[in-house]
Image 1: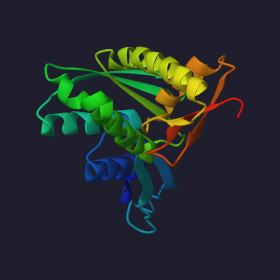
Image 2: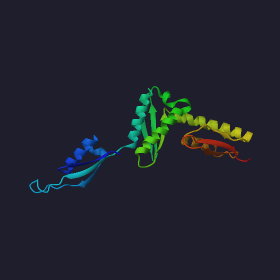
Image 3: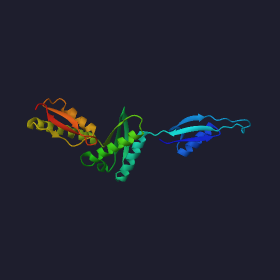
Image 4: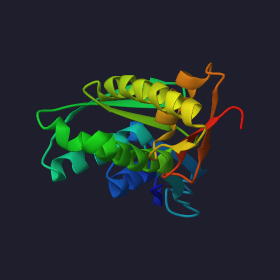
Amino acid sequence: MKQVTATGQTVEEAVESALAQLKTTKDRADVDIIDEGKKGIFGIFGTRPAVVKVTVIIDPIEEAKKFLTQVSLQMGAPVEIEVKREGKHVHFLLTGEKIALLIGKRGQTLNSLQYLTQLVLNRFSNQYLTVILDAEDYRKRRSETLIQLAHRLALKVAKSGKDVALEPMPSYERKVIHAALSENKRIKTFSDGAEPHRFIVITPAKR
């Protein structure tokens, strides 16, 4: 959070001084008038300057977009970013010619970027927000793959009677697995480990 305290002959002058120091505009700042000042006699005797505190309003979503733009450029895969917000869930939809570089093997790069973007977003947000980072519908294709994997492994666990641990996944991917197997009475699922290495274990319902 950037803020400065500035003085001036009037409140307006003090605000202008603060905005200049912060290199921002009034619509992107909060102004708190500490002292409206006093002109004094003949504008000289008893004069007291106006004092204001101006704080820059930082948009967490814009900061997250800025982060993604910089990282994608550094990776040699510039992107266009569309943002959709649904309550506390913020979706960043990426498109670009070299999008595969940002997805990585089995979405590992995309997952890492999502985790970092969420850290950036919540650093500036006054409420906790969840980030979902997608690249040209990769998440939808990934969900379909995860559902097929879940049913295949559940069958294996039911037959063998032995637990199967999946690779670490972000929370929304774990939810896909849990949901896909929620009605399977032969097995149970639970999450284990600590973020960002938390993973799902599929275990027989009856030992």
